[in-house]
Length: 178
Image 1 (spheres, rainbow, N blue to C red):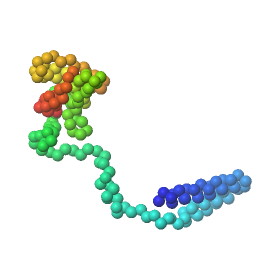
Image 2 (cartoon, rainbow, N blue to C red):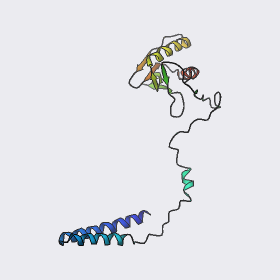
Image 3 (spheres, rainbow, N blue to C red):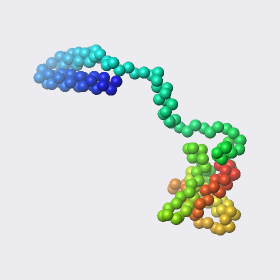
Image 4 (tube, rainbow, N blue to C red):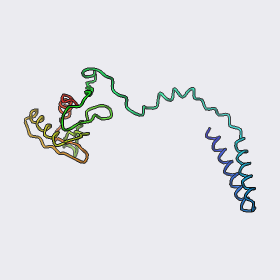
């Protein structure tokens, strides 16, 4: 198919180059138009090569192409066998909202920088991020007994907590209804 198009465009390019070089030598514009028409009609009469395009086998190729978007998760009660918890139908009545990731997970991640600096990152926060920080500090003080330092980034709407507390925060956010 590609060789057919390459041959077709090469012929058309050569024909047009010849027509326009002759047009500069002759004065008649009507003659140039007639030459272009005849070149186009002769180009369409070129025999195609022996390559056929089969759409029948495309169903086997279609299976290999990844989907363009993530499908919605199946509806079920309680956690899945993998431990994944489905989101509730309605968000909780809080001044902040935490959206799920595109894979439908709670967006809490751990980060290790400079070799030993451990932090937990809560992403996709919408609304009052300062209220979320207060609630997280209160919860982690109950869990650890310490007042842990936090960092709020209002531009990226993320909350960073010192230490690895991803599992605790994921469970706590799932219980809250995110």
